[in-house]
Length: 527
Image (cartoon, rainbow, N blue to C red; front, top):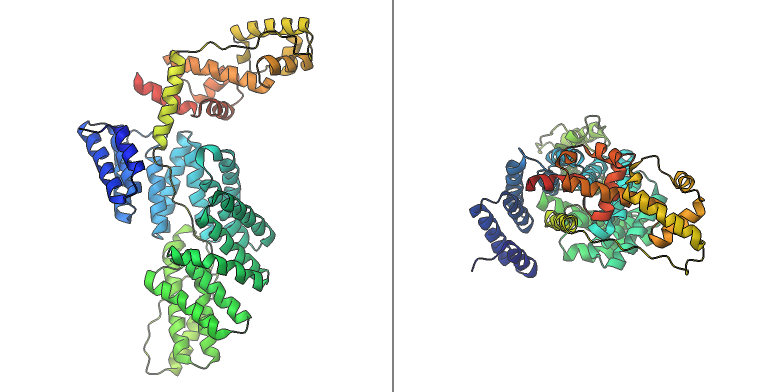
C-alpha cells in the first residue's frame, strides 16, 4: 500500500532509527517525483537535507532546492535553502561561502516579507561579525534578534532566543564589557536550566568561566569551566573542549602549577592536530607553550610550537580574511617571524620554511544550525484554516446589553452600541485618521464611556478592536477580490486604514499566524 505524504511524515517523526527515517524521507521524495509535485519535491529535499547530516548530502539536497526554486522564488525558497547551506559551510569553517549564502537568504527574506528568514540569516551574519571581532556592529544585530525571538518564543521555541543571548554574551566578552556579558550569561543559564537545555547551559557556563577569568576571579572561573567540561567530553565537542583546556591551562599557570598547565595546553594542540581547526580564542595556548619552553632554554621545542603557532594563524586567516577587507593584525606576525629566524640561526641543523601570514581577531563560535522541519507545512495548514474560515464565516456573537456593566449607564451604552454597529457595517474603521477621541466626538459621548463599552461588549481594547476590524476587512477583500489582491502590501494597508505596511503585517500575523504576502501568494496559486 502506498503511503500518503502525511503518513510518511508521521513515520519519519515517530522513528528513532536514522536509517529508517531516511528511507521514509527517500520514499517521500520518490512519491513527489513520480507525481511531478514540485512543492513536495522541495519538501522531500528539505527533509533529506536535515536527516542526512553529512556535509555533501546536506549541500546536495539544499543546492537542489535552490536550482528548483530560483526561477520562481517565494517567501520560503530558495531563501531557506541558502540559510541551511550557509549554516553547513559555517560548520565546515568555510566562512566566505557561509557569509555569501547568509546574505542571499537575508535578501530573499526582505524581498518576501519573511521576518523569520530575515532574523535567522542576520543571526548568522552577526555571529560571523563576532568571529572577526566586529563586536560593536554585531551587538546591534544580536539585540534586534533577541527582541524578535523573545516576542516569538511561543511559535519558534526557545533555541533561537538562547542562541542570540549566547552570541551577545560572547560579543560583550570580546569587548571586555564584562558586566553586560555576565548579565546575558546568567539570563541564558537560568533559561537553559528551566528548559533542561544542557548544550546551551554548558556553553553559557563556559563563557561565564571566561568572564570570571578576565575579572581575575580565578577560583570561580575554574569551577565554572570544570563543571562544563564533562558535557563537552561526553559529546565530543572538540572546539569547546579546546577552549576549556586553554583556560584551564591559563588557570594552572596562575596557580603556579605550570606542569599541569602544559598538559592542558598540549591537549589543545592535540585537538588542532586532529581536526585541523581551531577557534581563535584557543590560539593563546601556543603562545604559552612557546614562551614556556623559551624560559626553559629548550629552543628546539620552542621552535616547534612557534611553527605550530604560525600554522594556526594561517588556518585562521585562510577563511576569515575574506570577511573583512579592513581587518588589522591583532597578533604580532612580524615579531613571530623575527623570533623564528633567531631560533633557526641557533639550530643550524634545522631547515624550516616560513610562510608569510596575516593573523586574525579572536571571537566565539556559532551554535547555529537548528532549523524547523516542515515550517512551510505548518504555515500552509494555517493558510487552509484561514481560507476555510473565509469560505464559511461564523457569525460573530457579541455580548448583549446587560445591567451587569455598571461602569456605563444603560442608556448611554445602548446608544454607543447602536453607533458601533453602524460604524462596523459601513466600514468606517478604514478611515486611517480614526482615534478614540474622534470617534467619541462622532458618537457624542466621552472617551471613557466609549472605551469601557468596547472593552466590555467587544472584549477588546479600542486599538485592538479597530485593527482587528481592519484585518478582517482586508482578509475578506483579499480572498474575494482578485483585483484588490494585486495591490502592494503598503497599498492594501493604507486602503483599510493602517499607517504602514509593517503595522498591517504585524496585526495580520498576530491574528492569523501568517503574513498577508504569504496569504496572497497562496491564493494566487489557487486561481
